[in-house]
Image 1 (tube, one colour):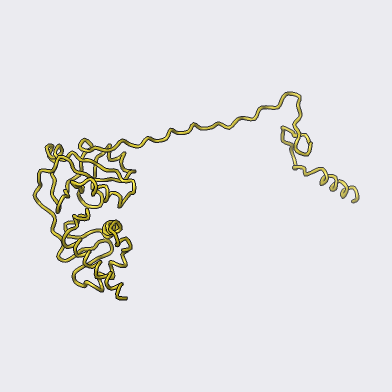
Image 2 (spheres, rainbow, N blue to C red; image 1 turned 90 degrees about the vertical axis):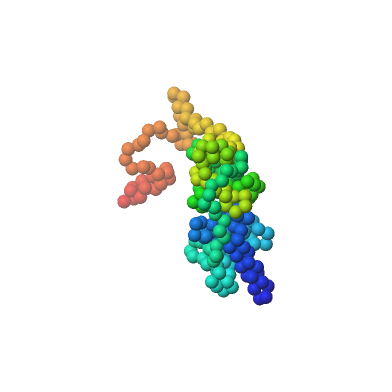
Length: 241
């Protein structure tokens, strides 16, 4: 019982740190109201040693039983009071390159249409490619790293806003500012295999079934006859009548 209480206390402190001080340290971005999607928090905690067990029920225990008035959650979001204030309203000149990540199945679309916001209203980028890979694996174990030519985009009017330490928020980015690895080659489609057509019988030949009875290539009119012994039995019954 004491161990359970200690784990709740530790989780409460971690949540207060993430939501109230440093979401950027975990590659997380709060919305303009200071809230974070619960599913994003759980994905991040699953990568932290010792916290992979945390589920929504554990969050509810902490919020309602351990920290009343300091942490809150609803059906989809969780937040702290006061929330972390890591946003900047002033755009800055970005580093030459920034990094993001996308799911493998979206790579082809991003290569054509550009990078769009995913879990937050803005595109979230980082100076650290390893962090970008890490948060990408929260959604897809085969996540694809996206390199953004940030200064080139800024020269074209794209605005970048710092968020905490090392994170940047921006709007949708066109494909001309993105560097992606080559798309994996698709295996060639297998040609359709045509079923061989049965060859017509040689003129004058007779086909027989497994019992040695001749097969007739035409359909007989009237009632379908059964085996010969059944026909003989019917004839015998008619004769006796």
